[in-house]
Image (tube, rainbow, N blue to C red; front, side, top):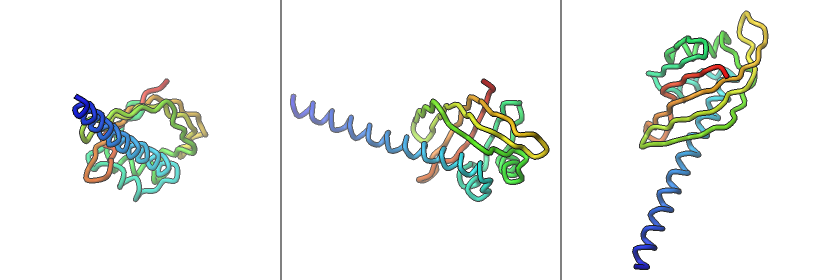
Length: 141
C-alpha cells in the first residue's frame, strides 16, 4: 500500500512540475511579446507569432501575421506602455489559453495618446521548444 501511495505522489509531483515549467515558459513568451510590441521589434514579433496568426482588436479589426507586425513596426499601432493584470494560463497538450487584462497607453500614428483598458484572450501553440502566438482577441472593458 505504501509503495502505491509513494508512486502516486511521485507521479503527481512530476506532472505538476512539468505543468509549472510550461506555465513559466508561456508567461515568458507573453512578457517577451509585450516587450517586442513596445519597442516595435519586427524580428522578435515574427519569432513569437505563428505564420497563421489571427489577431483580433477590440474595435473588430482582424489582422494576419504580416499586417499585425507591420502595424507595430510602422507605429500605426503604437503601445507606449503595457501592464498585464489578472493573468491566467490553462495548458492542454501543446495549446495554452492565456487570459488577462491589458492596461496601458497608446500613441498611434496620426492620433493623440490614449489609455487602453482591454480584456484579452490569446491562444499559444507550442512548436518544438517554443510557444508561438496563434490567435488573439481583445474586448473593451
